[in-house]
Image (cartoon, rainbow, N blue to C red; front, side, top):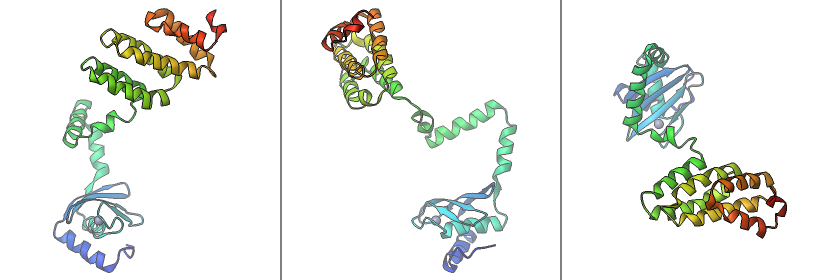
Length: 229
Ligand SMILES: [Zn+2]
């Protein structure tokens, strides 16, 4: 076994760590060892069995005593076969797996792994709008989100899609009318290069009387050809 990538001193300390039961667990998954090793803190350590290279969360980071302790644990046969562990999971029924899954997420507070990842700007905007119903000050929060993020980064389609939602809350929150102006203005700015989006906006304005400003904008921008649309 090619251990020379670890200094002698590190190997000695690592061995000592292993003998003093500082390795909380060692799991072999494919060609990788995964483990938690105690030291002045609790460190998460990974060792590639092909190269013996270790990565660790300790200040040393690479090929440290914790990684070596993990290797020692493996060499002494003190490890869990991770592949077998997963194989056993595959034998469980869906509900049992779901229960395990739930308890892991709850225990380790892993919600954001499942929530923020693919939340779109539109979803965020819709959620924030929903909050304006609860408290008036949320209208200001939404307005600044709209100005600083949404108007800049949302696609044309997203801008169009948020309109019916804004209209839905206007009755309760008059202030949202300003927001409608902002969105319509932005669409008209973009309309300089994309008339199809404007046509869709005009279609929307036939459906919602709150979009009366669309017609004014057509005149202001002198898009007379759209008047007949
Ligand atoms: Zn370490």
